[in-house]
Each structure stands twice: as structure tokens, then as C-alpha cells.
Image (tube, rainbow, N blue to C red; front, side):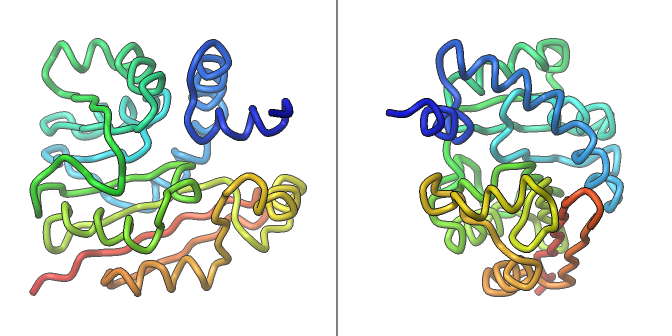
Length: 214
């Protein structure tokens, strides 16, 4: 496998020494876009939260610091990511405030209607079946609660990174969506009160959808 393809594979499922390096880089590089996205929502201190594709664990740590009387669960299908996230959140885990598990978004190991918030940072474009996986996240959300997707890249963004990602999307397997396609993927999965927010200068996007109260 060529070095470029190996790097792309590692971003999707980090493993080994290269995976550890990428996870360290992810924790650092994604911090600002994560903060930007989380500022778009209100997070109560009692929330029970799930971070899907928790990677190196920085987002889990940020959420635990906000939901001071709640609990944050992180899940990732890379064992290397799970190990890194556990190291990053060792203090929170010892306090019983954080739990990190190995698993996949396509079959979340949680009951229906239990989370006050689900976050997904720089990960949804790698999900194996995005329409179905959006519905799987919908399943574990409490009625009235939100899914927040945050990414520093999307189709149509006027940045060098976005243009390169679009060019090679077929080879990397990334499912890059436009603004309208983000709105559509939320709507088709049953979410309401959908907001798609762009930071055009940086090529960032934040998608928010609520599980309706029936």
C-alpha cells in the first residue's frame, strides 16, 4: 500500500505507532474546531453524553469538564483510539465520570433513549453507512435531545484542504457532504430543528439535529 493510502487508512482507523502519532495530532489539531462547534449548543451539567469516534479523547475530556455532574461515554472502533482516549481521560475515568468503550457507530452498545447529547467530531465522513448510522445515533438519543456533528472539512468549502479531500474522496472512502446534503442526511434520519452552520473562512461545519418529542 502506498504511503498516502496508509495515512488515509490510519486516519480512519488508527493503529500502531503511526496511529498513536495521528491520534496525538488529532487531539491538538481538532481542539479549536471542537470548541467552535460546542459553543453552538447548551450543555447542562447533569447531561449523559456520548462522543462517537472519540479518537484521542480530547472531546470527551472537554465534555466532562462541562457536564460536571453528568457522565460522558466515548466509543471508537479503533483499539488504539480507545487506549489513547483512556490515557487522556484517566483522571475522569477514575472519578467515574467517563467511560471509554470499543465499538462501532453502526451498532452502538447502548439502550434506546439514554443520551442527552451525542457528539461526533471529525468522524461522520468515515461512518460505514452514514444514513443508517445517523438513525442508530437517533435510537440512543432521548426524545428532545441533540446530535451535533462537527468537522473542519465539507464538500464545497473554499479551502485547499477541502478541495484536495474532494479530489481524492473516491480513493479514501470519505463521504464528504455539502451543506444541503448535511441537512438532508439529518432530515432523512428523522431529526428536527436542523441547523447547519458554516465558518466559511476556515471551512468548518457544524450540523445539529434534535430527536422529536412524540
